[in-house]
Each structure stands twice: as structure tokens, then as C-alpha cells.
Image (cartoon, rainbow, N blue to C red; front, side, top):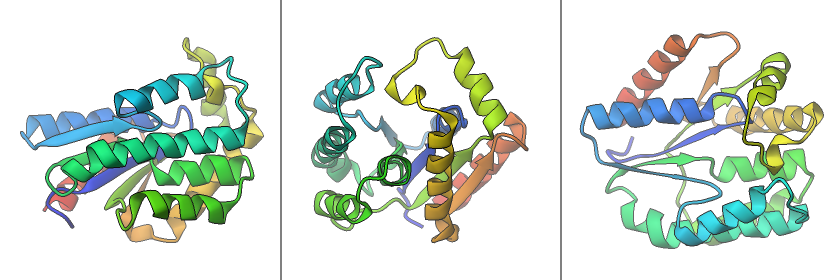
Length: 206
């Protein structure tokens, strides 16, 4: 594994993805390991503006437009953040290429080959070294969504959509199991998940 790997955190809404990322950041800070973190959509100043546009709960943009805006955000991140820091610092990304496939293809039915070609065009041979995939069941998903105060466009789908997206994530992970760790927020408490996460990060950084 690379000394300065690119690590991605994936999962549907309320799966615990953001919590896992925060635990990883805490670990790296504690051990004085140089890192950067970014989110998708978002990252550069321009990409953050695209994020506000895409995730606005009043957004009427169609899903094809969303796809191109996601890719525009990724293109800017690659050019201005990823290339500069790749293999120089640990890179933590909140959502990356798997999210585009899971949401835009498996969830919304957009063309898989097009998405793969666009990612290849933008990123070349850059790929994550490892991915943490958080999963959640229907009961916890609905319960946690109802507790959210700040709702964006992607918080307003029905369960069938999220179910298709999560199955898409799991299908992607099943094709390269050695580079994924599934963190199940339904079965394990936060401490168990944190221990699994940290143990894997320590192994990745060895």
C-alpha cells in the first residue's frame, strides 16, 4: 500500500459515512500524519459553488445536468488539489467515483459506460487505494433522515431509490473485495466501527 494513500468514504445518506471520515481525520491528526480532505461534490472554491447549486433542495436541474456538474467539480479537484497532493499526503475523500456510479447509474439509470469513460478521461489512472463503505438498513435510514434539520435534494428520494444505490455500492465493492471494508451501522456500535476503521487505516499506512 502507498505510504500516502488515497482513501475514500462512501455510503448512502445516514449510513455513518461522515462519522467514519471524522474518526479517520482524528486519527491522522493525533499521529501527526500529513493529510488533506475534500468532499464531492465540492473541493475547490468553484466546486463548492457547484455543490450549492446541485444539492439545493429547490433545484430543478435534471439528472443528466447533475452528472455533468459532478464531473466538472471532479475535474477541478483533480487539476487543483489531487495532482498536487497525490502520493505526497494522505488524501481523504468524502464520496468519489463509486458515488457517481451508485447514484447516477444504479439509482437513476444513467449510462454506466458513459460514466466510466468520463472518469477515465478526467482522472487517467488515478484510483483510490482503499474505500470504506458504510451501510444502513431501512429502519435506521428513515429514522435518521427524519431527524435531519438541513435537507438537500438528495435527502428527498424514496426508500426504493436509496436501496438501489446501496445495492449498487455493494455490487461495486464485491468486484474488488480486498480494497473495500464494509462498516455496518446496523450491527456494530460506534466504538466497534471506529476500531475496525482505525485498524484498517493502520494496516494501509504500514
